[in-house]
Structures are given as C-alpha cells and as structure tokens.
Image (cartoon, rainbow, N blue to C red; front, side, top):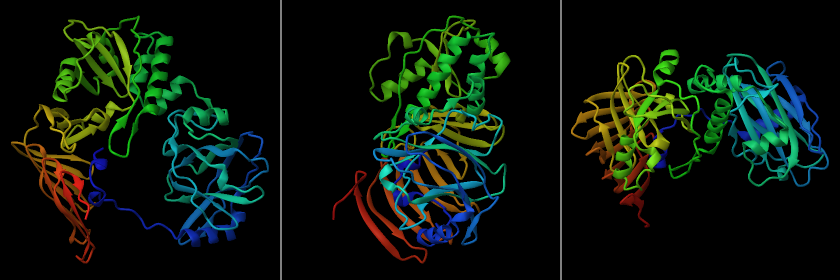
Length: 465
C-alpha cells in the first residue's frame, strides 16, 4: 500500500532472474509445433479457445512453456489484437513473440478481470489468473506466425487455459467495457459475480429478507463500476468515481443484518470523516452527510443514522477499495491500510487499537483518531515498531527475518536516517528524512559495498547538479 510513496532506490524487490528474451524466442520458435494452433479472423469475429497447458510443451533454460500459436490474418488494418483469458496461476507468466524475425516490445499493460464471463469462468475455481488485454495492431504483419506463450511456475490446480481473441476495430483507450463489447463477452449471473468477488456486502444485498432484487443488482453493478474507475497514479495519488447513492426503500435493521451476516469489516462515523476534512482544510460536508455512520462490508457501506436506537439502513454506498482488508487477524499485532482512504488501522488479538489518516504519507501531517500502544505491528514482511510519543521504526524484512530497509520516524513523520541492506547484510542505500521529505544525500551501494550512485535532495526534491 505504501510502496509508491518511497523513492525507487528504497524499494526492496526480490525477483527471479528474467530469461534471455532473444535466446528464449529462438528456442520457442524452433519448437513452434509444441504450441497448439488456433485460427484467428480478420473480420473482427472473436474466436474461442481451450488448451490443456503442459500436454505438449517447449523447454528453455529449465522452464516449460506452452500456449498457442496463430497466423496473422489479412484485413487487420486499423484493428487491434484483443483477448480475454482465464489461466491457472501455475502458469504464471505470459507474452507474445513472432516465430520469425526479432522479438519486439509487445504487451505493456493489462486489466484484471473483475467479472466472470461465460463459458470461460466458474465461481468455484480457485488459483486462476483472469485478464483482459489488448495489443496495437501495428505489432502484427499479415501472414506471419506468432506464439502466445505461458511459462510454468508451479503445479497447483487445473492446467486448463480458456479464452477468446479477436482483431477488433482500433481503439486508442481500451477499457474493460470496450474489451467486453469487442469480444461479445457475456457476464455470469449476479450471484456468481458476488461469489467471485468474495463479497459479504454483495451477499447481504442479495438476501431478500433485507433488500429488493432490483436495488441489490443496481448497487452491485455500481460496485463493479467503482472498482473499475479506481486507479492509483504514478505519483501515489488515486482517482476514483463518485456516484449518486439512491435511498433504500426496505430500510432493513442493521442489527438483523449483523445477526445474519456477522459484524462489519470497518465502522466509521461522519463525525470522524469531518475531523479528517477539517484536518486537511477540505470543504464542509453536505447536509445529507451529517449524523451518518457507515458500516463497511468489503466494497459496500450500509449507512444508518448515528444516534438511532434501532438503526435502519438508509442507503448502500459502493467503493472501489475493499474494506475487508481492514479486518484483523484473530491473534498477534498487525496493521493494514487502504491507500485511497489514506487510512491505517492497528489491531491486537482481533481488536482495533489504533486508527490514523495520512500516516506514512510523506510530509502530510498525520491525524490519529486513536493512538496505538507501543510495540510491534506487522503487515506481511513489513513491521512498524512504535516507541511512543510519535517515535517509530518502519522496517521491511527479508524472508529470513533480517532487515532489508529501516526508516526512522519522529513526531509521526519520517525524520532521521533511512537505510537499506542487501541479503548479504551489507548496506544497499543510505538517506535522511526531515519532516517527511528526503533531505541531503541519498547513496546507493552494490553488494560489495561500492558506491554506485549519489543524489542530493532538498525538501524532497532532487537537486540538479
């Protein structure tokens, strides 16, 4: 959640060595017959495919590759390659190469599929990668053959690759609805969509004891729209979509919802949100936002009057972020957060013990609703160590537990030394923060301790030399 807030030299990433693309391309092209052939059309017609990965594979540098190949059809002028696939995570990497000629830069990005599409997907299937993707038609040459390869990275689960592909009318800004339309993708019933989203909020909406079917489907559609519109920008900021939230006609009891479906993932009053707005000098809340408490179940908030004795749901909001990320583990001290909400929550043994906004967020002064007690709080390989009085250590750790990166905080802001280490324990970088911003020299070292780069910063900005 916080990785984008740090300079590139402070991000600790452990990656397997990438294969030699030129040598790999030559090896796969020489064994092209190992890849099943599909026939694509140049008239925009989408073609379905299903392949059992690994039934016959090509080998390179100790790795197995499989997928499909196709010959680029005529008539692809002013068209892009568009496809959707559902693949096992045990075949975890994919790309495209020409059988002849040089392997050029191809795919640059993709869209994670948030909906299930028939007949390719099943809500019961686990360990799957589902992707919507496009490639500019200028990459292709009519009559030439191309290999779409997947690399085996494990043995877990089914090896079935299912999907659909087409050469469709060119689009300069492909998004999920555009790809769905180009491929004529049919979405699964809403119950299966909710199951795939693993959404308690969606299940509550589909419970006819509480909500009408039409209202439920409309709010679930709104949640998918919110998910698709929520994007993190390269500068760490977020963009999302705000939509009108219609009132709920059935006004179900929140107590009954909790009785049937369990406690919310997170609860927040508009009084708290008002504190955050005032802290950031934002505009005042609208009148209809006053005296409301939101009970969040993953992508949905069930809104009630804050001072009601038996609160009824007034309306259901939708969010691109997943508030289930804030649910605590049953034991230990942990922390978790939602970047778009600028929110960090601390837990101990299943209970919330701290809540902060704009914490670990550069020079923004954080707002603590509740200050967590001193001690260690973990989030995967990251550890926040509170020493009290606004003093912290923020560490990343290698799988063996050794420190990979450490940053000191004072007054709840980055203040003081920041340092990183290679896996051999030698220093990887040194830097200094002042009031949340880089200040002074930031130095990188190789694994032998030799300095390889040095940059100077003033108020968080690089100083031109």
